[in-house]
Length: 183
Image (cartoon, rainbow, N blue to C red; front, top):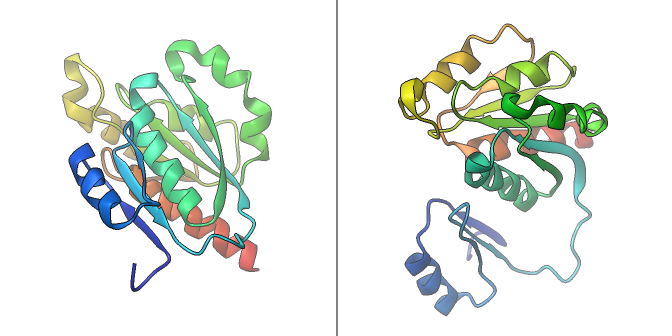
């Protein structure tokens, strides 16, 4: 905190949060994403920059999607979130098409076969950051199947981060949005 007014700690257990909270009473913890955040000097907050949407295929992918969203929010972005819009219930994604089309950057989080980024990539013309998750069974191989599917997508404009890397996706999306906003 001596070097920044904001701190993010990822993959944190509850015990780590309890220890941090003793030193920084304003610390917050999201137990789903296992992320600790601390913000100081928030009396005059700068308005958040809109434009990021985090789309989560299944509810079991929510911890990684939440990590991405919180990271981007900590970096000054307003984040829209939609969940449970994977290919097993594709009608739920189409119900949110207006929100997808209004976005400037989309983070698509999916496990199993990792199809969500490709589907979204066929619908929008904005950068998509694909995040494979280690969720799945059978031949998902702890996220490797989703990672390979996302890397092999034929939809244009998709960039892929590593398995379960919600932090990296949120950071990249925020950098894109903030660079657009500077120009």
